[in-house]
Length: 239
Image 1 (cartoon, rainbow, N blue to C red):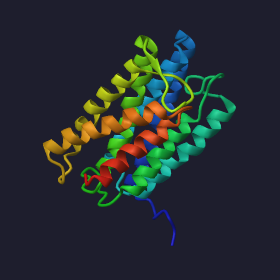
Image 2 (image 1 turned 180 degrees about the vertical axis):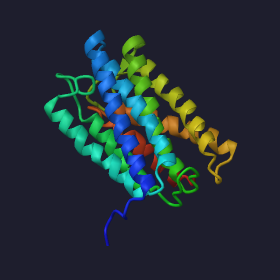
Image 3 (image 1 turned 135 degrees about the vertical axis):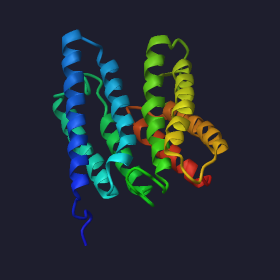
Image 4 (image 1 turned 120 degrees about the horizontal axis):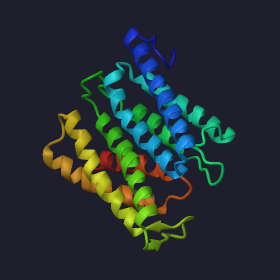
């Protein structure tokens, strides 16, 4: 028994599109960063948001969930190599880099592997919406927490002695970005087991979990704690 079934032509096409998109995204942002001298913390979050948003499209590109796990797992290795050699300046700065991009890819691979029941390309009817909730909380909540916190954050705090300071402004941005993003993507997916009321309560729960974990997770580890925490909290609560 092998982990990967023989790929269909649609799967091969989806893999080509996915790797092509990732390559084009990195190349474009890297050239832009070097040409315009954009701060790395901005280009890093651009890659973060555009990569995370693309995870949603994988539901519609792939008809074999095993290859979604294969794809996202491959970026655990690729991102770690980039991290070690510091080749992509716009993603991994020369100073102060963390393993956040590696954790990001691992979280996507794990969640897509765990919540894969009923996978059907174009019409997800299983529990993939839980994976999407975790991924979008990580994608938008973390990004806006960082951007708003750096730009407007004046009220700093630390929780449980965690490394690195957070800001109240960044945490508020995290909360509201999560509340908005999750119902938006759930609405597009239209999970048959969720009502509009579920969208609202699920978003509130997700935002609370996301903000809490982001506040206590140092060194890029929020890319692990936030998506896994959100997805499994919703699962345990019966969503």
